[in-house]
Length: 449
Ligand code: PMP
Image (cartoon, rainbow, N blue to C red; front, side, top):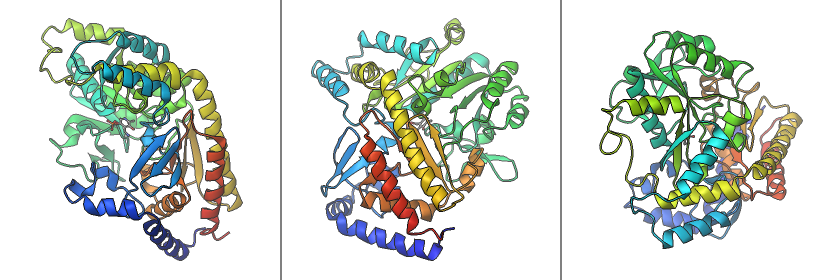
């Protein structure tokens, strides 16, 4: 289906063109010898082209790099900028708040507004804030271990919930639990702290929950970090039923599945989690995250007088809930990622997916495209993978690199970690159609049919 020799030749050609077209970015990368890995954060070395583009400006759904190229940005900061870059209402709120101070260790009235709005959207009733989804997940895990007295947390294989120690567990091909490949400096063997089941596998889930030692299942309602893997009919209902039967709390991490609608997958699919965690997009580009608890859980926590929730008990951070992050979150939820905005974003995502589907059909490729509200992903497998393990095995790094560099050379950015495209309120039909045209050319150049 794909001519691998031609793919290798064209990838080479695209990388050469990328280097020729981006001398300023390449020069900056060359100068960064005092950065570990030459980049501000090591994941910025995930670069299909050999060095990263350097940012000049990002506004709405358009990024401009140091060499002056403009891009239709479907990466959107891997969801951190799902509201679009520098959305004007958020920018104004941030400027105003910062001018009046951000880190006084005192609450502002915005926080209660945000808590009420998050409850309207996600159902759970009591909210607390963090700066990253990683921290929101870590603190929830501590709280749920404390009230249940159970030691383990269950995750889906090849999930991602940030750099949470407990979550770096996968099932190998033989069905054994083990540490995820490349897990850096794990504090203890991950099977001590965690259990794992494949997504869409209720039998596997029940087998693990039956041990009676799982405090919580932490999951994305749909996997989004190993491609999009959607739930099969009855799966999420089954998860809820089993977690209730085995007295295990259910945590929906909505950090990415927020793309499903204004209240994420939780609202879109009428789910009933005990806890919701969310980060990235809610701050409109300013670090912000939150976790929401059911009243039953907050009552149980409050009843445990020996938990130190005020000082050094292991939950919290100095900057969490700071006035700037909260002001940004309020403006983003109130004026940018509104119910109406999600309708537009979802329609754009369907248009994007339809363009990709046409190309797949034209060349009769064994690929698939999945959509989760405003988020679209193409995978080199058909039918679409049913779980994280299958999706992991469907990876094709050369093909992925080729598409990413080909698109970047023609003014389109996808999320660097996979073939994911996200729509923002600022994304235009013209940008979506430009992707369709360039994707069709990129595929035609390597397809054998
Ligand atoms: N949860 C999910 C579902 C995520 O996709 C991510 C990041 N990709 C995180 C948590 C962690 O977010 P952060 O890196 O901002 O802590």
